[in-house]
Image (spheres, rainbow, N blue to C red):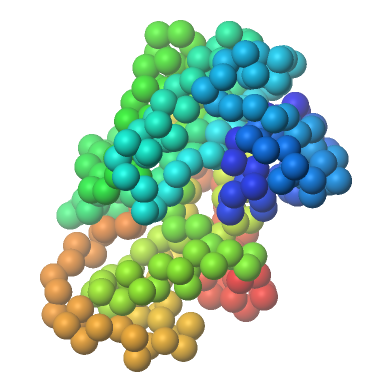
Length: 282
């Protein structure tokens, strides 16, 4: 496939691109500064310097592309205005450019944080109401809604993947987030997904026919508790004592993966954090 990718230098993109190349796909990436993408060019990637808000720079870039995979986003620690411009407006701009260029498929990376505090009766499913509580997932929710509208009204070949907590392959995501987790109930569980499985899900979403407009939760098979994560990182002493007294929803950050398993034949390469640790894949 001819694949056009945003966010190629980010945590997910930088680990996704080599897997695409290994499978023989032709990869084009959009970057703001081509001088920072030298390693990508050395790997055989077509590096395009441009901006998501400059449609003229996208028109040429999207010629002959089979699928757009949109990973670029502003993550935690951004204000509402920045999140809106980067995560909503940029997504709409890229989708409209893809429509004009007749790109048949558009994969959008979202997050399971769009479910907010989750159901109280079981894992969150793709059709459940979305109630995000912070700017990043709120912006992802709005982007999803805008892209789904483009799918319904203009035929955008949209596929949405909602990622659980991403980790693995020397990504510091877990250790960066442990200070915040120290305030969580130690018994709280969360679904995670290894970079290898993120890449698997993205590629399945990009290559499977007949799934336009579908949304898929992406997660491993065995949620892990906060207490276990701290123990595995030898930081159990950093758990805040009062956190153990906090009430919590046992289904928060737990998602149902039945749809992606049944429709895309997704099976986690690393079904748990423990299997990734044992394999030396952290």
